[in-house]
Amino acid sequence: LRRERRTGGKTDALDAIRAARSALASEKPATPRAGGQRQASQALVAAREGAVNAKRAGLCQLQDLLITTPEPLRSELRPLTRTRLLQRLAATRPHGQRDPELRGSLLALRSIARRVLQLTTEERELARETETLTRRLAPQLLDQPGVGPHAAAQLVLSWSHHGRISSEAAFARLAGAAPIPASSGQTVRYRLDRSGDRKLNRALHMILVTRKRTHPATIAYIERRLAEGKTRREANRCLKRYPARNLYRLLESGASTAT
Image (cartoon, rainbow, N blue to C red):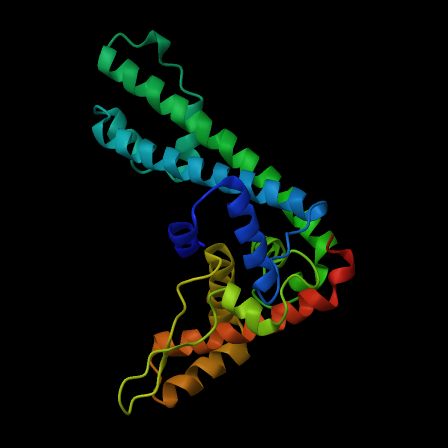
């Protein structure tokens, strides 16, 4: 399209014609993602991620403020666990403090602690709603080892609906789990794919992190690949392809409810 614009002029009508020709010439036009319950799940996942990120930022800010909190308050707060610390700071009443530095620190710490606690409540509420909806859309995923509700929700979001992704190889490519040739001379090897849907790739990664600790077949597979001379990174790359294939087939086989 860019080359045609340089040689054939540019108007809205010409751009529309070129876009239509390009779409018709492609092997298969892109299929939009489904709405309905999937769209509801996407909204819940996005809201939860926002709450998690805001909570993480609040906790970092709280730790930074604790470093500069005046003594002896800093020594009193340092040994507390996160839960106890948040509860104590949220219940603080600094209005009777005459020291302006201490009063300002307490007001700031209380504000951040209450915000973090509120975000924690929101995160848990959204997580429950996400799990309920995911069990309705793809309960078969949650029966698989290492697949939690958040990973399952992301799998459903990226896959969307039956027929959108043509094959398990295409799904693996979308997930960044397809092998990319990186051979040199007599050395034949493949590398990790850094393209595709990174959220889907992260979901697969977290599934494998759990399986490598608790799933005997996965542990045995890693040990076998390492014994063959593969590096740990190469073994992980090989391993990621298998759940991508299996989970795609499960999504396609249970597609009647994922709308």
